[in-house]
Length: 220
Image 1 (cartoon, rainbow, N blue to C red):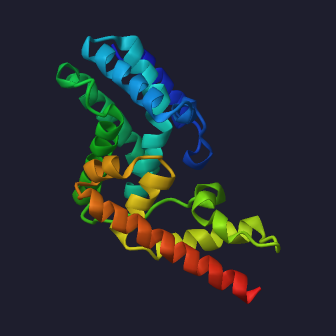
Image 2: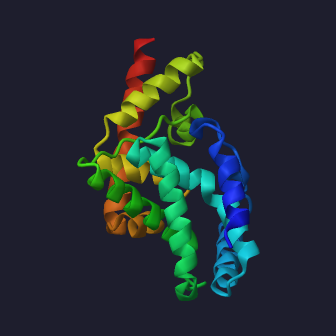
Image 3: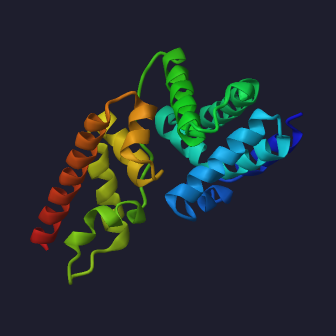
């Protein structure tokens, strides 16, 4: 029953996590209403046991969910196990899906919980995020551009170290916002926090990055 999904899964698995680029990047196309409509249609079709829609959703979301799981588990094999478990559970619960609710948020919540369970089973709980690319924070620090060009690789490494300094929950909220394009409301649902708390986490994360960038520019 899951042959097409597993074939896609195997194809995705053959490429390193930090280099993987599949159809998930197309999710960001269109405005917010169009993206929500796309997920709502997937939800409705999967609820009706439409396997083609199920496979399409897998292809669209696999890279993002694997990266998210890897950021929590820090283990590539575990991240793929989480991905497979999440989609199997999604199919099992398909008749309970509500097209009016956010399918994307549901997938991230399931992935987060499954990843944390992996860590608990292994006897520890960590939550560091993978290295962010320079482009992931450009929008956050664009107001601090300088006439003097910073070496891209050097800056990317510094940004990564600055992000690692953030408290765990703040780091997660920031990644979900800037890398996965979730709204603050959606992040609150995924992380089980109030929207106000998410707003505070992201505000403080941006403040931290901006202060670091200011200090770097002043030193040059």
